[in-house]
Image (cartoon, rainbow, N blue to C red):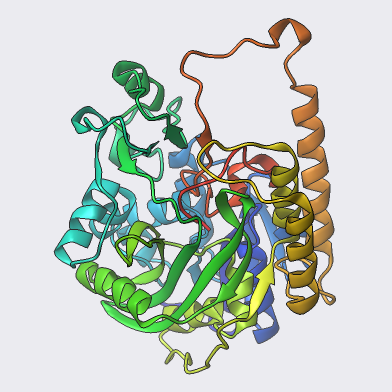
Length: 448
């Protein structure tokens, strides 16, 4: 493959989560030309001073095939050396057409058959079993019979795509994760029709602390790793991370490595776990096979994954010998606001709500003690303000869409608490909501 190496560039999809901006801030100062591709010019990355070029592309949620076509066309440009996946749709189209992309760019992601073992949770949990990595009790909805216990219902797949759901995916929404009230089985037929597939049921792990093992792999070998623990989510019961701290636990390291080794992984991975305090072990939630929304924190804590990814993609030796200090913390300010709003106004029957005064004190203390922020940085403030503007616009839109008085008190028979997940659209990511709107409920996994 002949490339113009005098002006090497990277293509990064522009989403509302901070991961795109983190890639730009890491790579542009190193002389890497940055191209942001998004369906919306309001993506915060487009406002960054480290964005060299913005290109409009189709929304993958509307037409994932057209989105893949657009990425491949951009990849054919001589100044694009590689592409960085930041959401499930990105890595899906890159893996699905890996042979075509390999003709024009350096492909630093898994092939489709390997990716399927991650984006199909049935196959993922089978791989975890083979690797002797613990998972919550899980079954397909039509195979679950213990409805007296606390459970969650979640999509089998992490993205609505033809490779999983068939060609007719244009109007399919695989849905979010939902709490299931004990003693009240869901309507099987309605659930399948609504989601377009047979979802999963999983035991609920009550500990809201969420742990993640992050890694970059090169053909089955780990070249860089990092760990963090989510201390606060967007909701007081969990969800995407608002505040997290770097940690190191050999047991978490072992679980993450064993699973990725079993998969013979290549590329990026965020392996999400919950800590089962009764069993005293980490239990797998899922793997995000792309960059995570809390990526800015990983970089500021000392693990510069965008640079590692770039080095590996272009064939350089990855310089990942930097260490990080456990206990280092970082914030997504919009997530902290969502957390406080949740404490003040929301009620979750299975999670004890903290006092607002105590929550406010905890947030304020950590902001002073650990002043690291995903968007808000002194030398590149525009993405922070664009993200804030998007949040205000989304809030106004939600207010205008509030049901009328005639609709008040009307509730679907199928209504139940929803847990917004990192998937299919960045549940890891807050980008699941338009332009930074907070998710409606919290998740039993990061999707950071």
